[in-house]
Image (cartoon, one colour):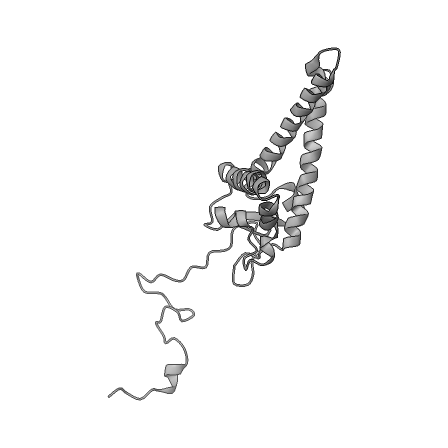
Length: 205
């Protein structure tokens, strides 16, 4: 038969208990983890990152598209201007062939800028682009590892651009790309389809 409970039994940890304020924990006691959230990430009172809204992601996408367009245009103008104009590949007498080759070259430059811009910038800022910085958001990895260049290429170029944009979009008449863009609207963690594949989240910075 157990002893009757005393009033002091319900008053919290007793003296000597490692959880009691001001007490000394015994050897081998492992307190609960109180690690802070990742640097540069806004967090809720329970230390979980605050997820970015869909509109902030769209705003960042628009700003980054403008940045890519401006940078690509500057690169094309500098290169073609130094080489004698858009039709420089056709020689002095610029014909249709030279113009077509010049436009193809311009398209190649624009594509290279678009594919390299995000990974290079994200690797330097741990998950941000100029657009994301302007909107106050960043990309993080769910496992807590840093956003490096190789992983950024996987997310931004291979999965996001090629799988859902170029390949998936061409076979589904753009439906795969549209679903990827709209998926955060109903996902409980605001993830796009490419976020699910690479296990990333977009959070407030």
